[in-house]
Amino acid sequence: MFRILVSDSISEEGLAPLLNAEHIEVVQKKVAEVEESLDQFDALLVRSATKVTEELLAKMKNLKIVGRAGVGVDNIDVDAATKYGVVVINAPNGNTISTAEHTFAMIAALVRHIPQAHVSVKSREWNRSAFVGSELYGKHLGIIGFGRIGSEVAKRARAFGMKVHVYDPFLTKARAEKIGVEPCTLDELLSVSDIITVHTPLTKETKGLLGPKNLAKTKKGVYLVNCARGGIIDEQALAEFLKSGHVAGAALDVFEQEPPGDHPLLAFDNVIVTPHLGASTIEAQLNVATQVAEEVLKFLEGKPVTSSINLPTLSKEVYEKIQSFYNLAKKMGTVASQYMVEPVQEIAITYSGTVADLETTFITRSLLAGFLKPRVASTVNEVNAAMIAKERGIIFGEKFSTNSEGYANSISLTVYGEKQTFTIKGTHIPNYGDRIVHFNGFAIDFAPEGHLLYIQHQDKPGMIGQVGKILGDHQVNIATMQVGRQAAGGKAIMMLSLDKPLDDSIVEKLSEVADIEVVKKIEV
Ligand SMILES: NC(=O)c1ccc[n+]([C@@H]2O[C@H](COP(=O)([O-])OP(=O)(O)OC[C@H]3O[C@@H](n4cnc5c(N)ncnc54)[C@H](O)[C@@H]3O)[C@@H](O)[C@H]2O)c1
Ligand SMILES: O=C(O)CC[C@@H](O)C(=O)O
Image (cartoon, rainbow, N blue to C red; front, side):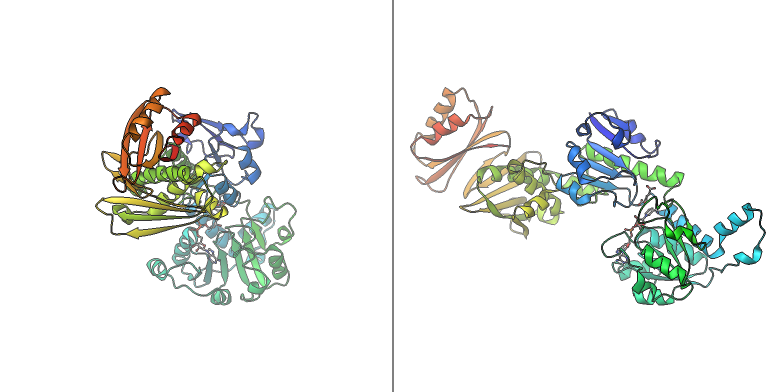
């Protein structure tokens, strides 16, 4: 049974996939109103009101996923979520059309003074000359940020006969051509546009993007629109440029602080505002709620999610192809970690054969998670494994090889520690399973599963008997046993799989046997 906390108002109809699932319990309450312990929840669903801070994440000890019913995740501390191994997903396109339409409604309202005229008529005035506007036809619209919403705004602008200028440093030429726009520099856009609308995320680079310096480069009489995030247009600079009359008006759906309270911008007649309504349509709310509910359900059922902020995204098809290697890699990491009980500096992974053609990022993360789990007290999984490895100074890297030495596929892992280097190689055989085919320089063949016992010894008659006797004397049943050696009479290994975990005292007894050099128990 999974428990999900829905802490903001999210469309009930959209939550249906979760509400109808048998193994899911949905609690619809604000975080602050939850009386029980917060660590009972596996998932948290929010819009923008709930602030998912590090402090909250620390309290939700069993949290696995945060779902944002919307695009922007600036109310979620994604770095902290990554640190705690919590997946963050959003609903990236469910509210695109609604927000583009709202932007366009704001543009039209702004240049035709609709809100001001509305208030005037409601006040029993009839002042037609006070509200003379401008046509959109033939005007230059500058769009900063040409992603999902920016490009939908462009389509609507073209339908109105506007000339569209686009600035987005990450826009590829191919995409621009496909949509039929000509990208320009920010300076070009600023100097030519009659109306400028911003559609970027709020980042270090975009915070204050339209500040004093760039606003000074705009045409006198420019109109500004922000239906993206408060702060992209510097609010203080905007107030100054409105005061001087350089900016003719602004339409704002978003503010640096929401609600804005008694904000100086609200005092300007030529500033029109809405309370972050871009995504507030029945359709958008149903879309984002459905998207996020379906994704959370998939995730809790162990299936891949497609809109994760802090995990590589995988399609179902790709996930199905990599799943076996993902499991194999995790087991290899677990085995290697328990073998190398010492500080580790580097982990090198080589993918050979068919696996080399797959999306290996996820497989590597799985291997790292398997490796780090026995060493790290906090949650470690595919989300935070790479970050934890880096934090602990472990370098890791992938290599690809066409030479899989007779196997259809293989993953080779070398761990460089302070005292020794350890190599293990595994393969996945369809309908047979995962096999370790090289272990620490020995050719061998065993399944990396259950309670394993590794023994390295001199290749002499009677070694197997001695090991069998000690285990038998302690009522430990051997399920399987594989042996390997480098040369007759030289170094040899045994890998046993046991029916129950081994006591340390038995490990000690085995270590005392003459000609046994290494004994390690490994739990997979
Ligand atoms: N008002 C609302 O209710 C509402 C609803 C949905 C989305 N939003 C916001 O709208 C914005 C756009 O959303 P989207 O879905 O189109 O996102 P998107 O990721 O599809 O597009 C963002 C675009 O901004 C571009 N960009 C990034 N940094 C840039 C920079 N420094 N200069 C210029 N361009 C830059 C990116 O390349 C990308 O193309 C986000 O801030 C989102 O949070 C607001
Ligand atoms: O939840 C909302 O209504 C706001 C959504 C919007 O800002 C977003 O980023 O998706």
